[in-house]
Structures are given as C-alpha cells and as structure tokens.
Length: 105
Image (cartoon, rainbow, N blue to C red; front, side):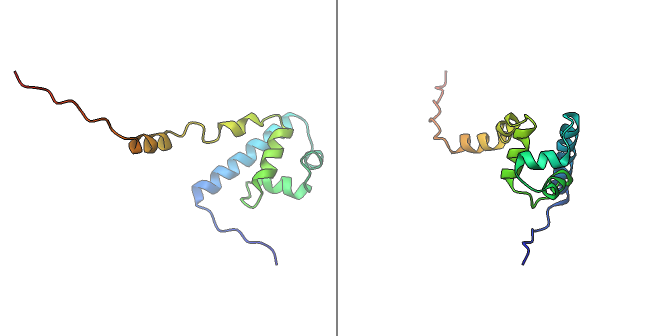
C-alpha cells in the first residue's frame, strides 16, 4: 500500500514548489541532466522530478544530498539559523533580575 501524505497549507505548498523551481534552475545552470542528478544523489529520476515539482513526499535526506551534488550544502546551515521568534521565547524564559527602586527626592 503506497504511503499518503497529508495535504499542506497552500502557502507551504507554494514555497515547496518555488524551492523545486530553484533547484531545477540550479541543476540546469550546472548542465546536469535529471538522470545524472538522480545517479549522483542515489535515487530514481522520478524522485528528482518530484523534488523539482515541490512534492512534500520527498525525504529531507534526498534534498540534502541534492543540495550537496549542486554544491549548495551550506544552504542547509542557513535553515532556522536566524530564529528570531525562538530567541525571543528563550529570552522570556530567562530569570529576570529584580529592578532597582528609585528613591524619591
């Protein structure tokens, strides 16, 4: 029985599709065919097609290997590197120093 994936929010699906288009453009700029890319990544050509279409069913490991083949593995380091919301939440949990009271004149 084939695995099914849950439907995504439209904004997320649009971002995955945009990512797939950027990966395809990067592959074409390097003049690598889908077949050669699939061989280098270690997957079938159809998996590369799915990746470039933004399919959410493609494993993260496949994306990581594809980025490596394209010489873009450093982009993985950028994911969630600037987590401003997480930093704010963490800072809110830090113990607060008591404020000094000002004495009147």
